[in-house]
Amino acid sequence: MYRPSLIVTTVVGVGFSIAGLAAIQGVRAKADLKGEGITGTVEFREVDAQTGGGHDMKYMTGMKAVEVTVTVSGLKPGPHGLHLHAVGQCEAPGFTSAGGHFDPGPAGQSDPDMNHPFHMGDLPNLVADASGKATLKTTTSRVTIANGPLSLFDADGSAIIIHANPDQGVTGEAKSGLSGGPRVACGVITKQ
Image (cartoon, rainbow, N blue to C red; front, side, top):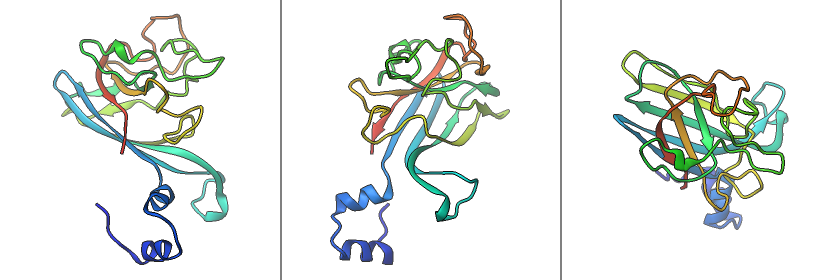
């Protein structure tokens, strides 16, 4: 919900357009997660990447990162692999229409179990509690939701997948399942 503030009034007052104001506040995207008995949301927000371990403005690099906030219910208790996938499709069963892990570029390797955990779309495991609920807030500088070569909004879009098993964080043979195995929930990433 938009709430006017002194800062917004000042910024608009010096000649910024509403579109320019949105750019200042950061690019946003979302995904609605769905699977058999599983529902949730994922919010993506472009933020300034930081170095030096502090939040002081003098440590801002000027680079951007993407803050990913996941809220989901209906999972089996325990850890689950969580990844950004290369295609913005979520066709059940199996969600294989989402393709492999997001990993563009001439040296990219989208097979989920190979070149792992070095894909652009690799994220930390999501851990569900005893009731099947999980939340996670993490930041990645491997992708962007703005324009560019690492944008999740390329020609075929992107999706976020939750796997049945934990991501072991190691490279293995193709189709070995080390990155989380079966896909249990999927959400197409859309701009807000």
